[in-house]
Length: 150
Image (cartoon, rainbow, N blue to C red):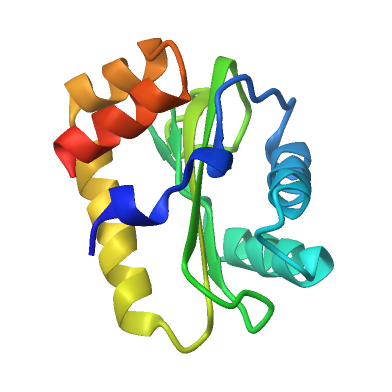
């Protein structure tokens, strides 16, 4: 499964701003709803907040990977958010988050969901990958960086 095939141009947001995790999750859902990707924002927002109660998805090094499975989503959906300033996501290392990959999936997609989550995690371990995403000039460049590393 290729991340580059699932992440679409209308789900890449390069000038994301939030003050904290709660505001960020609200905005993630709002932006995806506006793009037409989700139909039941309240259910998905609840699923993301429930997942965060299990432990932060702010994994450190300026990265967050919020994710949830829900009956309110029909197909695997990935969104990418970049925040130049960074925001507090209660990350494991306490550092502000600049790069977010949000993964939403139907309840029935256990295998593909977990494989995609693992792939995103592997990609984000690369210092060059993270640096390149931070300096990408536009959405097309972000998508090309992902495709080249996928």
